[in-house]
Length: 146
Ligand code: HEC
Image 1 (cartoon, rainbow, N blue to C red):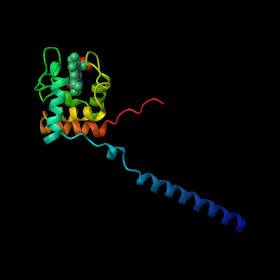
Image 2 (image 1 turned 90 degrees about the vertical axis):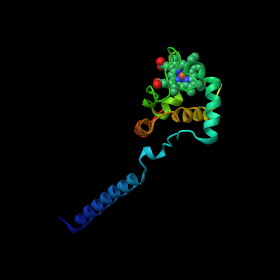
Image 3 (image 1 turned 180 degrees about the vertical axis):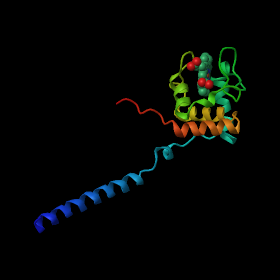
Image 4 (image 1 turned 60 degrees about the vertical axis):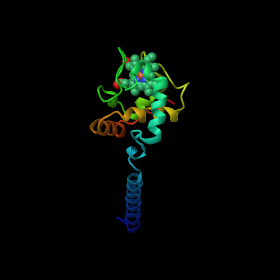
């Protein structure tokens, strides 16, 4: 093999390897998607007061003042399974409604809905909170259709 050709091949190889390495570095610098999700914390202090007020005004009629549910309406406290939904799903249920659960997106701001979810979480046990946090981190919201 003529020396020129060999040198050219080596050069191509070096370029390919460094491109591959650069690709690796770029990829490994991307944070995993879970790091961008801020899990809603259970409400305390002023948030709990505000959340309880909102809950009594808009939600207690069906879900009960203690979150224990009423008749056919499900409990949101620790007695049932509201914690089996990731945060984005809870937000979506309250914002858009689901089956006979009415939509509140036109009545409440996204911040108020987050406060309500934080209020509901204050009823959950430490185990339920931990389980739901894991679910929220591991089940990212589906990306909306373009
Ligand atoms: C008219 C009655 C009614 C009102 C008012 C209402 N809900 Fe609901 N809610 C329901 C029903 C019924 C369901 C069950 C929906 C289903 O079957 O998919 C539900 C489900 C939910 C769930 C999911 C529970 C689970 O375990 O899957 C959440 C969270 C929730 N409601 C929060 C709220 C919040 C917060 C409010 C106040 C802003 C509210 N709801 C007001 C009737 C109501």
